[in-house]
Image 1 (cartoon, rainbow, N blue to C red):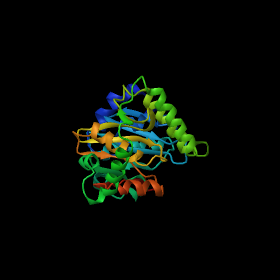
Image 2: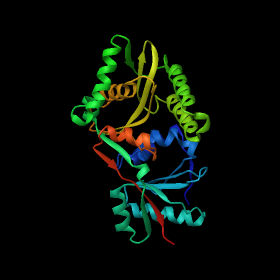
Image 3: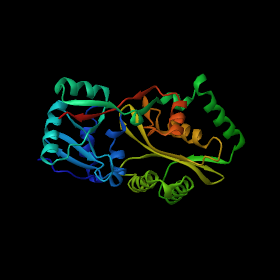
Image 4: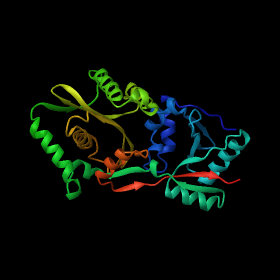
Length: 299
């Protein structure tokens, strides 16, 4: 019998042993994401049978499992999970399925699942060098924003990392950003605020990569992420004052320049089906979209 428990910061080492077995590059397989959103989604873990099992969303309208992760064939972990689901009458769909994992599931357990592509959950994966250099015609507009910002604000801006000295400032900046963007009417933004505070409170244990952009000694943008594998940095949060032209492109570029020189890819996660966010992420010319599926067990 699987015994799930809430995610804790102490699970990081053990969870990452499994999460890094396959370099899927998907944000669901980044411990930082699992941990900082765990309270909002009610995410729980179980280590059993040499697999990591993950259950999430039972306090939402979309309860689900993530596909079991282990060194053995995925079909073995799925068999254990399906037995648990049947015995506990928790026959939830299974998320976090890449093209490769989908093929493994179809080969190992043919005709057991119906698969559905989740376009809103696709991760945007970029070549790190593209976001660092912004070279090429497709990123010309981003270079223009940055050049204009630098020319107009020469000597008045600076970039640094989040530290004990500026942590409170960063949290207050995010709270204001949240309020200005309708946090009180958006449950998702309230959850994100809690995720941000939890992540920043444990930034050292999570080994967060961080960046803060100041203009006239006032924070106008910040970002944090995690190196989730040898070749990929995953960006969990990026916020900026949208009233300041170039603030978003600047924090994006400065963060990549500081933290992503030695990786091949940057995962900027999903667009959640939000039109503006989708347009923004596409405008940075992703190397590819990491397609994900959900699997629904057949009766």
